[in-house]
Length: 538
Image (cartoon, rainbow, N blue to C red; front, top):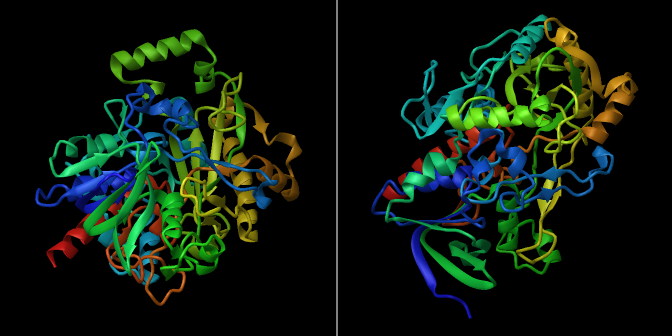
């Protein structure tokens, strides 16, 4: 028997980076009843708060959906893991915490595609509103809930920045001013040595408000429709079905995988796909699940000499104990900072837009055969590069009409020849940087790909066998005008052809941003809160 129907003003599906932000901002109005619904359970697992804890949380079914792609033809017919956070905070519970806004041209391009209000100058105030820092740089926000911290310098990261300079990449003190070109230290979503997830930053305090209700351990299975208007959602817990009705709006913030999945299950999407699974088509939107973009990372690794890396810490009982005690006494040390402290943004094979970097390098103080596997038994570092604006596209599709079945992820990596050329060039550039002083003085030899990958064909073969996702999927409910047949939402994030339904998460990005995606997704939710408030006032 179904449970009774509950009513609220706004239903938000998914308590990830977007959902937590949106719920906190909308519930600032005490007259508005907001209900946030999340499939994961609250958790006190201590590694969720420790910045380097993603080695303990990624792949843990309590905190990770453990998605994986279908067999990828362009990746040596492998199925690649796609971690997605589960629980209050979503993927901000398990990500690398780097705070990067992208490049101003990312957002100016969104505007040029017909999305009024999304230029760099118009979204910058929302980045600033979210942000809080210990030390302000020009353009920083002050007083927002999302703490952003400077990272400590270390000899290896300093050497990388210097070597990058010798390779033609000028140093920069800030990647977030609109032009992210250069090499330098990242900034991170931590505060006093602890992870600054959106649950900690936004939701924890907001949950004290009587007008915000958070329902956990509840998987939404369908958007409830009456004609062309969203009425609410159905969800299940322990096999029992519940209904939650929205007086004003339903907002999907379930991410680039599950937001299109929910739309398709609800009869909103490509009619051919829906008909194949005997789902009644409410509105034929061919773009739902299409336009999938992700950052593919290519990871040469190097054996080091004369310096301690995180490999040494992980492989030594006394070093691990030393840093564990240090962290708990002072909230400093390797456990407080994560793996990637420094990096670079640069242009390769990009003569027409050399001022708009198309490659990002993460410099890692660790090396391993596979992400989230034990480090190598020797001192090691990784130069991990990703193509920022790939031409390759994938898609998300439901496998059947069962709402609990995993959607099919077709990433489409390296399906575009231009991406293959750029990936090869990235490996050559990382080798060039590694050969430059002073970084070269710390490197004993290239561990991977090594001597087996010298010509273009050998390098590409190695990339296909070893590269993987850096976990930035976006674009599957793309924002665009009604004249764009593949657009799913308009510039105010309403789903085309429907009333009372929006999507607010990384899936609405029409083009992927040139950098990590967490800060831009939080910005999207900050702006969406204003769009919803404007609609309610009208």
